[in-house]
Length: 118
Image 1 (cartoon, rainbow, N blue to C red):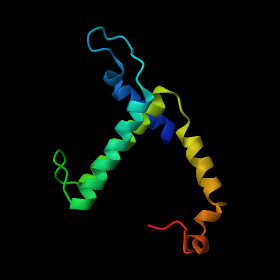
Image 2 (image 1 turned 45 degrees about the horizontal axis):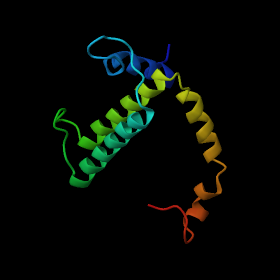
Image 3 (image 1 turned 120 degrees about the vertical axis):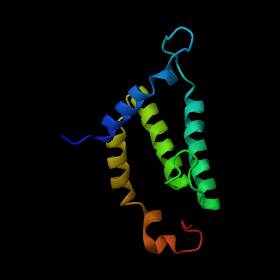
């Protein structure tokens, strides 16, 4: 049986249960959602730094830092989604379908002045 993104989210959340417990009592804590989103963002920033400097990761030295930091971001995203029973699989499928019809995603519009570009 294939795992879904929601399965991975549940698995990441279970593997990171310690992040959701009071270290003294072991009781579950309510984490600040803004802090959780900032932690995701920090992993993306670290990936950018690895890309900018073309660095190898210091913990997994056989991998590029950008790859490991993106993995960290996904782990944090899945952990948060698992904690709050978010349907990432459904949201991604719906968003990808929606993006197919977006005018600002069409190649001719992206090439125009003020269009989306890198």
